[in-house]
Image (tube, rainbow, N blue to C red; front, top):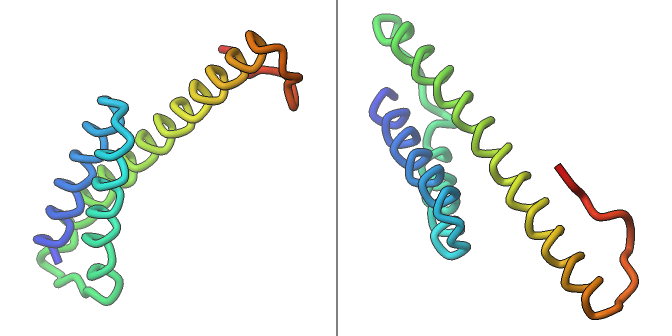
Length: 101
């Protein structure tokens, strides 16, 4: 179980790095690798002596997942802003107000 959690942590670190690099191909590859690492954990059981470390790993992994989700949303908003600016330059009507920070 702990090895599986360590694998998820490593894959999540790779996804965080890919998000920082803003490379779509690397983000997709890292996301698929993370999904493949999470699937085996569905039926895993935690031994009593491993429970405290597992809880710590799960807590830090959940915090990193939330941070990654926030990054994805920011990148999505930035992309939408770029698209909207390009449409404005070309004189194409916007579907709605542009998102700004």
